[in-house]
Image (cartoon, rainbow, N blue to C red):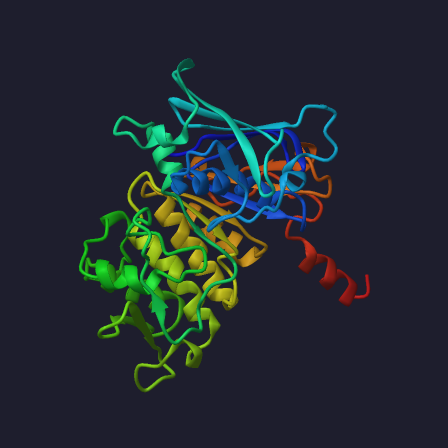
Length: 381
């Protein structure tokens, strides 16, 4: 189930923030302006839901987020004297509001006060123990957040071997923050059938393996990938081919771009409908053409029923989104772009809309305009 709104109160740089979200939400703008903080609110909650910890505390550090201590997460310019913060998520029919405080909390943790669940505007339950959310009748919104996948900027791309996940809470589409489980997921899901809406238009194979190869080839000419379990171990070997190689080679002999894109493609091909993927810098180590192509690919997947949040600094990636909109791979109303300006609070965030021709509603100062500024100077103007 998609998140339609994120609300923050007294969280990091945001004293108060309500931000509507869509199937594809793009966050861009200045460094240290709050983009990561917004996404960390989702990751922090997902992390805690997966921990199955009922000690009454809310951990600030784990597999998906490392935020430090209480002093690092409370808004430093808040006018409120209370030492509590609130995070809320909404879907079309549900609202989940979490209240946390720091009163007598150990280092690296907050006190979990309660989780209030609402349905169609009415409170249906107030949860004091997060383990209750694992019941069969748990909220679809909570389930989607719990199972969300985060692909971070630093990816385990050049290893000789890759691990199998041993945590039973890890889903069979969670490639891991560092992409470390992508080879495992490709191996066990290789013959699964990919949703028609996600398939590469030029590929006849319907399987995860065939589609991963097809989308890799879209980014890198004649690229292919192979993942195999190393006999008598809990490790896997990952190998690639491309137009420049005569055979299968290890990741450290193929270049960062291909191995960095690989976990993204696996996650995008295997995510369930209603799933949530958060991606930090999908453009990392990619050639400008590939940055545009992966923007178009991500748009296509978001239109298929997987909600995707992206933090990016790439104008090529953004242009890929615009092209996808014009080519009708994703409806314009399913794309939301936020530009985070120099004011590190809610007032510094501008909403930018995109129309069905791929045109932007406006271009704030600092919004992917550096090329024009540099060319203006080079021209001696």
